[in-house]
Image (cartoon, rainbow, N blue to C red; front, side, top):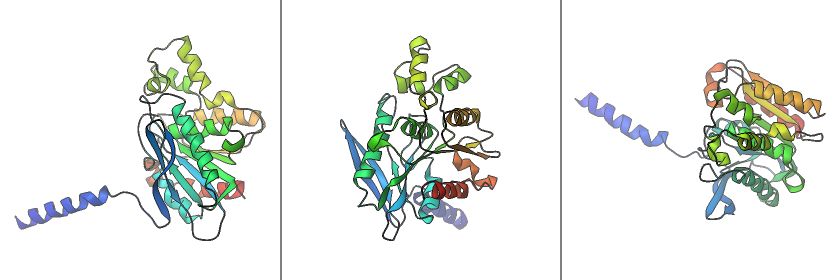
Length: 277
């Protein structure tokens, strides 16, 4: 009886620790970077010790455009970037179906502008800003990378397992899924296919883009690695720099890669240091 009671007590006291919000020295949380109607958009900011300015990364979470927040899915990158001495920000953005395209893309652009405007406060080198996103966030950082100009242009882009061609994704499943809420329709008609094409980064590649590093698992059944293979080929055909790290055995979601022994984080850090030098 006593052992059962002790076990119950241990389980009860362990639960809050599992739900404890992420925190670390040098991290400021829940900073408003934009207001979209009545929606307050917030980010977390990590600033290294030292004078700076530092190379900087803006992180964009995934979640199929319909779920997730600034601590979701992309959290495995927080510690490696911190230890490597980068300033970094992780952002929230408006989600579908409550907010249709281009709300999420506009929010990423707003975050880029805000980071540049607050460069001095967070020791940001405005000429060395990289975007990093995973899944839907990978799509959003790639979109920002291929369409950004002037104050929204960045120095590098790192999409993880990004759906660069949304029409191909829908054809694979023969269903819109969460993309229906993103574009405001559940019908697969000519207008829908055109909309999917219009908001696919694959279709906006042109010469003069910032360098891209893609990271993709070869066992990804949600967004096949062919998405990254085809994007790299088109980027290079346009004269741009694009590389791809393939994670052997990697499924969709970097959280599942911990047991694979992949050094994708170290490779990413090395690429960022080289590219943002």
